[in-house]
Length: 102
Image (tube, rainbow, N blue to C red; front, top):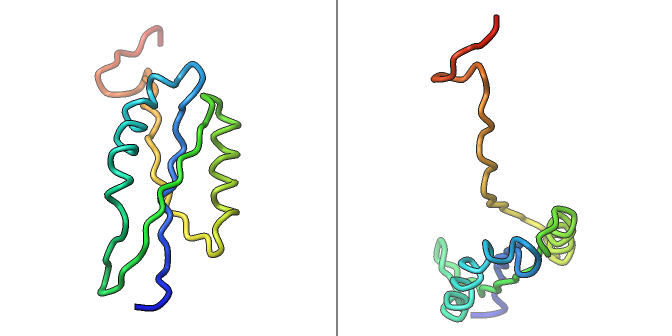
């Protein structure tokens, strides 16, 4: 097969700073999984796989910059973003919450 396309799996995780303990499980999985992700097949095509890990330094701005840098580093950005959603904030009008002082 000729020159194969490369799929880059980019991960921004807190490796340093106050949130580093939360990033350790993902970092552990990536260290053990990445060597086994040499290539993937989809629709009869084979793609090389590259795993890129960036440190968010436990800061929102640094995380945003890492995502932005990763997007600009690819020749053809086709980003599929997977994020952990923020937990919902409790609301006074949500089911199970009684209104007080109306």
